[in-house]
Length: 492
Ligand code: B12
Ligand code: SF4
Image (cartoon, rainbow, N blue to C red; front, side, top):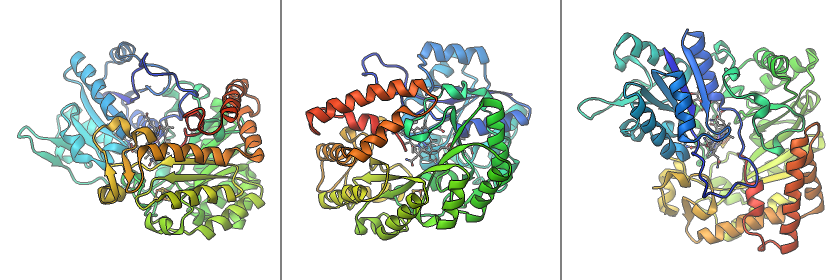
């Protein structure tokens, strides 16, 4: 069957001001994994990544028509639901028989809503690899759709049919590598400049699922709470494949909690060292999952940065959000990390349900007091399917209707905790970035991140941004609204 996978992104809008920085464009690995698996099962597959380059409706449809798919899979984020509806309308207007299935983060949190959405034929809940192969086979043979585990849809009587849930894929090593060859060239993806030191760089996803219970996190809905992994040998093979095929010099492991299985991390490092793989890399993880020995071997194997999900500097809020750690452990693990020669990055959130102006100040001061080189202060967004979403209305104002607002922009914050306002969130986020970065050490680090090695494009963008930052500095923190957040607030 001819299967087209689309990573939706907004159509270009001439009235929208161009962003200061191109958006982070990491390749859509979920769709690429599904494509690899479908291809191995004998299907003709293509991917359109609308987040990469501009796609007008006409350009998109020209590509869709040229491929002529029978089945179209859309990877859906909450923020991309409106554009996905437009895309489906365009496709159905051209070819009413094309079947449209949505999967990914938003359907995982809102399966019934997606199944009922008249623009889509099916919602796929769970990992898409085997599910898409099953669905394609079922549609080709005219089989019984009720047998496709994980599929939700509306029957002719208007009832939502919820098939049996699909179990998680236990042995990730049986999956082929993501079909990156179906994506635009990897070195044309604009990754954020804090994510790499060497170029070309790209992303890998080596584990799925997370056992922690942070109330704001949707990851458990998407890939489950059971931690499953690619083996060290598979990971090392994939790195070598990326080097040999695409000349990759740096890897960002996009795993949610890369270091959860200590033995596996040591195994990956040993593979890199034993095979003499020259690669620099960085990861994200939870502070509770690192120790000195594991950090030491990671450093030796090329790890230069760890982004820790810290979320708050207030002990009470830390408990309320069920982060599964405390501020003293955060401080200890970050000290170990930097002592052993790895740069630490802090990922913080502002506007938790029980946040107050005092707890937010505590978060900013905590960030400043840590030896972290960089920091993010994201506005809390209650995604559908999270415990936070269920409790949000009890703790503040929840404005859930317009899915376009689920970008974390404080001006359009979906959730505003009691005692706070949108204006306050906007100002406090700007001040947080200002207070964190307007120190000589952090400014030097910013400059280093912006220039990087062997990448003149990064240098040019960095120089432009440093000019904007200097302007901001000259005008003071209130002087150039939005400039600092716009260029620092761009990562996960
Ligand atoms: C890498 C990443 C990105 C990358 C790449 C995007 C991509 N599509 O892969 C970039 C940087 C572009 C990105 C951008 C954004 N992201 Co993002 N991203 C991630 C991250 C860290 C990892 C995703 C990943 O690679 N997973 C690994 C693969 C194997 O899993 P997967 O993508 O989930 O795919 C599997 C299943 O979900 C399913 N599946 C997925 N798509 C489909 C489609 C079909 C048809 C089927 C059947 C199945 C299926 O099958 C796949 C294989 O098993 C996740 C966190 C997470 N762990 O989910 C956040 C996450 C998905 N991002 C999130 C957000 C909010 C954003 C942004 C809105 C951020 C912003 N403010 O700009 C933007 C918007 C993106 C857009 N489309 O415009 C949220 C989504 C929440 C939601 N309900 O919408 C997450 C969950 C993080 C969070 N805040 O909790 N993101
Ligand atoms: S540790 Fe990270 S991935 Fe796991 S539940 Fe918490 S925020 Fe989500």
